[in-house]
Image 1 (tube, rainbow, N blue to C red):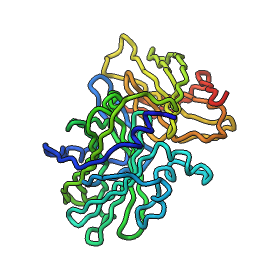
Image 2: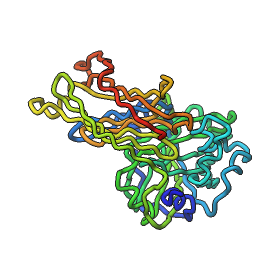
Image 3: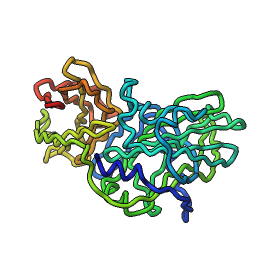
Image 4: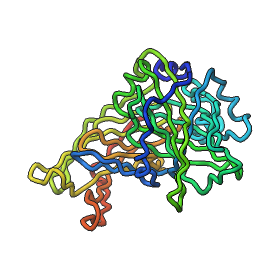
Length: 346
């Protein structure tokens, strides 16, 4: 069994005070489509989920069996219920999910950290917000900010919310993290911070202090993560080169890793094309992506957990305009001849 995920499941939670003010500049990233920025290549972080934002702070002591969460009033669905479609699979992720169910109240808003799950360079977080005095429907629920030793290691986040009742909303967040997070995960305290609610139509902001913290030890790579090496490259008509590195299958997701290199004669900051990928199973059923990021290196396109019935996948590159603003063109070209076949089950 994967020691990486199991050790997170056995994490010890305790109160951890913030010694520095929370960064409120994340207001700029509270969007339904999040665009991350990098100095050498403007990445586009595409999320297929609704994004919200919030505030929160708590810490917990102890864990609860995953099946208990479904019976807790107003807390909502578990991460397993969110990721898995078939009822018979509902306990497949039990070994990887840490059930917390700890609550704190500030500014008339109760925030409950339900569950967390580490999965392939992202942290999945289930949080519930409840208030009888603040109409949460009028505010953007905040995305969690992930810190290690006070340093922000979040590289972008997406989320989807479910209304439990008129006073309660559950948020499922996917926080993409720095590549070094795995090595630091078991060595230093980890904080999940929520700092504010931003009103959707005014500039009003409810600022508060809601933080969850936990610490665990050990750092071993996942034995339950399957890496399929691809190492294929193709060239676009303008000289741009796309190198498809690998396809990673983890307990909670599937991720395509690739890199893009510009034409040597082109302006290094002027990318004519952007490339994403369409994925379908052996029966031709399209599988929608959850998030993606295009960079000169470390590009990825991430999908949800693969069903046990999927045996083979086809990945088709889609060429879009890499420019923005008035320079952006309407380009949507499927490169059928460059399709990649992946055997998931052998």
